[in-house]
Each structure stands twice: as structure tokens, then as C-alpha cells.
Image 1 (cartoon, rainbow, N blue to C red):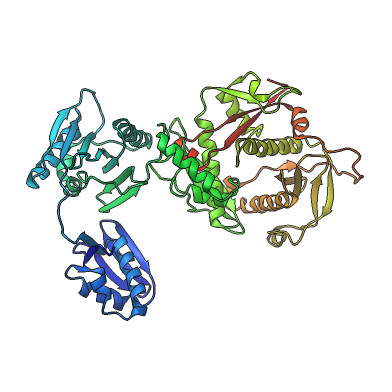
Image 2: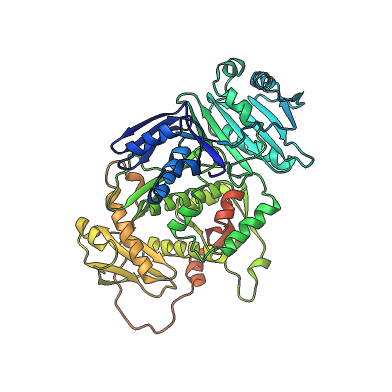
Length: 558
């Protein structure tokens, strides 16, 4: 900010309150929280009546006050109360602007409106008609910066559901066009409606801003590659969106950058909901992503935190999935993970080529012939819990976690394996909360399995399970969470969070082990053949979480 001057916004409405500052600007209504801000805000308002560089603004302040005031200035600038400008204001005029005008009324009207505004600013432009017939309210354009190697950026303007959407894209001509098509794909799938355009253009107050914005020759969006903005009138606000790549193939540079970032990142377990939440924080969007931001409205919290995500399937249908956790971030991470798994399954081909998870003795799994299953059969298997999905640190890890969960469900559903009754671990996380809802006297533990499987009774003859391929403690913690979730789901509004219940298994009698436990392969092959296939959510999500695996049980063999 030191290279720019500062001036108090002439259009923002700024009011101070006991709790902080409220700003109404083109960015919408935003807040700066803090005590005792009235005096410094009024001081800044007076000092910035005329353009003032940051250094000059801070110079008269005691050294101890400069950093807090600079942080306040940054917060007010981010929210539109203070504006910045170059030390020598000048309009960055492009070398050339070309509009591609379609047949839709909006395209012609928008081109005319922008052209009129550019003429008053001495910005030269040219129009050409597109040969493609389009029933959509779209105007495309390209802007080339001045200079022999001037950067070319593209933009797409679209009127949809009474709001203007502006996408600006860098890269090659093919990359710019595919990004524009990606934005249109998301909007068409959002079930909003288009508008007929000439009257809407004449009455739309955002066109003067658009006329200046689209001719800028740099992008400030994600990684300087894409920038998507939604312009609403009621309220008069500008909303930035992240364009998520779902259909298109990323550039080689983007693939290399994503792979390098994952290799250089500290070792992380992507099955941890906190890791999912943090990696996907910038990839959720209510319109331009298949996964909407998590939200908690009308969900009754405590003892666990609950969150839900809307996910738009490949066919355009909306589904809602839930997540839970000790913290809100854990709940949101699990909700996003569940949304990605649901979305990944919906993207499978109608006929899915799968491979056996386990190779016959002396054979290589990669050399085995693919087994083709209809996607509808896979969806039924998931609904009946005869399939499982999981994230993983690697493809093999994801397959192991999913196969372990599938094997645990099959053992509990069959109900023939006896489980030992042991004292309930009263010091385990959540045990004290569970004791509020039910007696906590015993924990049921399976024996003879290649993974940890425990169960907690939550109703007469009914139990919930916890499973882990790695640690008994993880299985116990999951069983306690599932038991708490059972009780919490009985509250009105939380019914969709109910976990799966199983019949209480028969009692086992402890006896020293005389042989090693069954392998995961043997445990699963008692029920049928297990097939596997990787899942994909498109380039953006796959770069953040590359290993997602589906395993399906085919009873009796494939």
C-alpha cells in the first residue's frame, strides 16, 4: 500500500458503533470489529479528505501507534471505506479491444452500451459478429495490452437471473475460451434463469464500472488466471467468485504446480476432516463450483457440531450431505468430503470399468481384465452399504480405508461374528458427554479381524460401530461419535444425521489367539468379489485431493 495514495471514499457510508465500524459500499455491508474505533476512524476521515500517501499519514503518530493505525487503514481499504490510487493517476488504455457479438438481444445491447462508454473515454474498439447461433445472453471480448508483447486477456459478460456475471481469463486463446465455457456451464446448471437483454442493459447501473473494468490488462483473481464477479443491483454489491475447473483439462503448468505443491507440503492425512476443510476452503462456491460452502442453518448443535453441504451432481441435480465433528471445522470438512464423494460417483460413466481390488495368488492386479458395471448398480450398492468411498494419502491407502469400512459393515450386517464385552473407556474423548444420554458400561470389541472394529449399544438390541485400519483408539472415538450422533439426530431438524444402526452381535468368550487374524482380502472374499475405481471431481478439486477411491462388493463374484 506504500506505493499508492489513500483517500476517504466519497460513495461509502461509514458509521461507528460501540462494537466497531459498519461500512456500506459497492462491496456490500461489511464490519470491522473492535472497541474504541470511533476516534481513530473520525481522525482518518478528516486526514484523508485529500489524497495522502501512507507514509505521510503515519508520520505524525507516535511509533507505537503506527502499526495499529496501518492495520485499521488496511481493514477499511479492504471493505471500501478508503480507496487507493496510483501516485500519478492515469487510465491504463489497452492497445486493442475486440467484441464478439452474438445474436441474442443482450449481446447486441451490451456491445452498444460498452462502445458508447468507451467512445467517451477515447478507447478504440471493434466488433465482429459470431457465426455461432446462441440463445444465451452472452457477450465475449478480448483485450490486448499496449506494447510489442502485450498480454491478451479475454472476458465473458453474461446476464443471468437479473445479475451480471463477468469472467476475465488469461492464458492461450483455447484456455480463455474453455474457461468462459466453464463459467457458462456452471451458470446453466445452477437452475437460475436468463433474461432478455436490451431493456435490462439500459437500466443496469453497473455498465459504467464494467466499461472501465473489462479493459484492464491485468487480472487480480485466483493465481492471476481467472477472475469472476457477480454484480447485483438489490443490494447494489459486487461479489467475487472462484471459478472451479470441473470439465476442462488444466494446462501442463497448472498440473506441474499442483503436483509440486503437494510434494513440498508437510505430510498430511487427507482423511483428516481438518485437512479437507483447509485444502478445499477456496474451492467451494454456491454457483461456480459443484460444492457449495458448508452451512449450519436450522441444525441443532451439541454435543457434536453439524454442518451440511449442497452438492450439484453431474446431471445437475442438487443433493444435501451432512458432516459432524467435535468442532465446526471438522464438521465442515466431513461435509465437504461427503459432497466430493457423492459428486465423484455422479461423474462416473454410465458403464464403469472397474478392477478387482485383490489379485489371485501369483497375479498382478494391473494385468487383470476390467469388469464393467452399470453406474446404477454402483449407486444401488452405495445405498445398501455394499460399497464404500474414501480419501487417501495415496491411491492404495484410499482403497485400503474404503475396503476396511466395507468389510466392517459386512461383518456387522451379517451379525455372526461374536464380540467381546469389555469395560467402557470412561476417559475416552466424548465418553462423559455420552454418559449424559445413556449408561456407559461396556464396549464391544471384535476379534480375529485385520482391523479394529468396536461397537456401542445405543438402544435395546441396537449398536453403532467404529472402525479403523490403524489404531484401536480411532475406532473407539468413532464409535462414541456415532453414539452421540444417534442421540443428537433424534432432535427435530437433525434426522438426516442419524447413523446406521446394527443388531447387537452375539457375545464372544475370550480365548487366547491360536492363529493370526484373517487378512482383509480373506475377510472380504467371504462375501464376494471387491472391485475398485478411482473417483474424480475435475481438475481443481483433484489437485487439492488427488486420491479418492470407490470399492464395490459384487456378491458371489464378478
